[in-house]
Length: 149
Picture: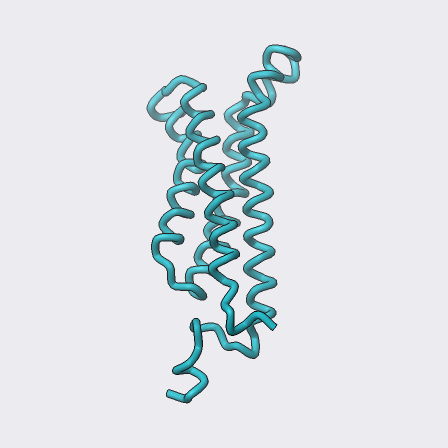
């Protein structure tokens, strides 16, 4: 093992760290944006249902939740796995996957277990909040002091 590898703060090649950080930060940014949109959707839908009966029905549609989950889950999974390969923090990877499970599982809870809508929305909002926090922590964990130039 070379001296550089022994002193490394992570398994990412320090010469390539800038490129790695940019890629990981971009995936985390997209994860934060998508998770935020998901939470906003769940918070705004009840208001739309009351204020705009015609439009509110589209936002309440199960298909909207499924489509959002189809974007949130793969982006988040890639961001958390990529970050984990760098920082090796299993607790952070697990936190991300708990959030992804809640967001991705909410439509399934509604379809298979016939749980009332408000619980599905609460599950999605809670999962989105966890994801936003986990993406922020993932970004922070990928910032090694040795790489900050």
